[in-house]
Image (cartoon, rainbow, N blue to C red; front, side, top):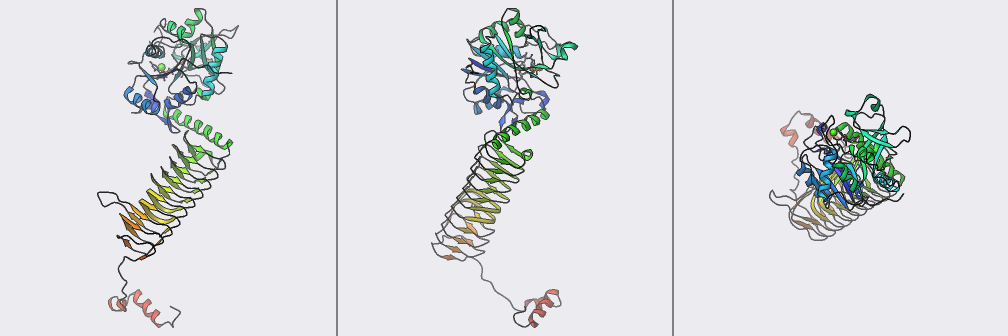
Length: 482
Ligand code: UD1
Ligand code: CA
């Protein structure tokens, strides 16, 4: 079925969402790295509408601000008081300067699982059947709260939608419900909205009344049944928010697995919609992949890792790590228990090991920072080794300074590199050194107190102690047995 480019898509997002019990407007709550309304806009955007209008009302500065950030080019229509879905669409048409020629699609801002495919099916049915309005419906296990689809017993044609609160006992048995998604003829929609009344249990202008109005005027009213009823679920509380997140996450992981990614435990692996994977990536349990994270071919991530806006190169291994804004080169290894902060760039075959924190640090090809270190504001060349328990002392209490270490260096354990300082190519530093001056290439820097042994100190100062007895016994042993 070919999709028809709509004249407009209208997203209803003026409601408060009281049941979320939140200071954040409902449509700004997030699942899989995107707001609820952001998901709806992404699906709607695939229809390539000429106009995309979001109706805002409750907490409208917050919602409008968010839209400006995530969807520039989207228009907003203000609905000051929430007088019903019909009234909300009227506000949108006013923003558009009247009911446009062509198709107007209406969706709700709180249905993040709705796919572009289902929307395209709706607009294609709408065009193929020459309808004045086509409603997206679904058979649901529990229809409580939803508007019911009333069909003509003889022909099966949709005749009306009755809201749950206004429905009779017999009508409430119906399990085919209104998803809240419609395709309309723009002109006829505007005319019919002018005739919508508020004589219902909620005293609201119901968009759903447009169906009956158009049908009575002799226009074609149709329906498109969604293949998967879970797609049209609206989020009203945080239980439903979690359920939707689970469903969307499974959808994303299934896509990745079918594209050649091994997900060892889908139940404990969470991904954002913006994450990309290449073939033969392995993701271990307890892993969260967020933002613009990209995993290249054959890399392995997890268990127990959270990567945000991080690129992992082909064949690299990242274990038990938290990383944000970092780049890990091909065949490099990270962790277990590493913390990569923004601006970390680890070269090919490099290593950031156990209990290592890095920030704004470029670590060259084959260079290793294996244990218990902090590398902040640094550039390290190729094939160098940074000794265990070293600190790049970047902060003097007022400003941050940079440290440069060359290639093929061997720095000793427990070094402090007091920035700004430069270690030349091929240089060595002694264990326990506090490096405050530049080290020329190829030299050994020693910057620590000399060791002094005071013989017999224990026997004199701690006579009779276990230490003194051990020392006494050691002195009696022949050479080589001590
Ligand atoms: C609506 C439908 C119902 C359908 C259900 C699907 C009507 C009258 N009822 O009911 O048939 O089964 O959706 O989820 O249309 N909104 C505004 N302004 C308003 C009122 C609502 O922008 O004045 C927005 C809300 O923010 C929300 C959407 O419209 O995004 C739906 O409103 P809601 O109050 O949740 O409608 P329901 O009562 O669930
Ligand atoms: Ca309502």
